[in-house]
Amino acid sequence: MQKSNDRIVKPFSSRKVSVEKAIKLLRQRGIKVNEDEAVIILDFLYLLACSFKKDDTAGG
Image 1: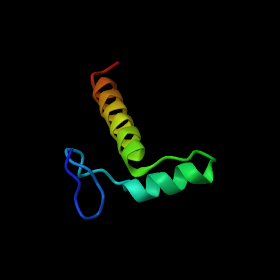
Image 2: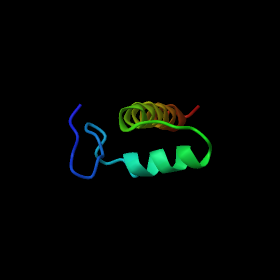
Image 3: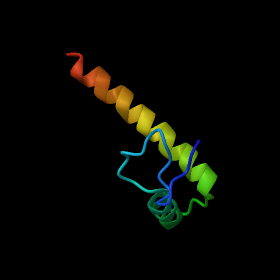
Image 4: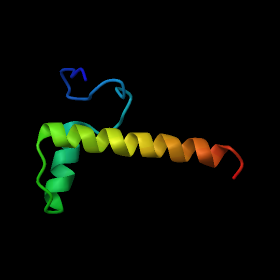
């Protein structure tokens, strides 16, 4: 995975939540993650959201 200067990781560079924001939100809820773990979590959630969006538009 490539990392850009603003820490949003490709191929999901259009994502609205930065890695730093995700770390901050998780930390507020008592979950401690490092940058690499936050990237994995964001990638998973983005893929899940994209999958849900595709299923939702299929008329189901």
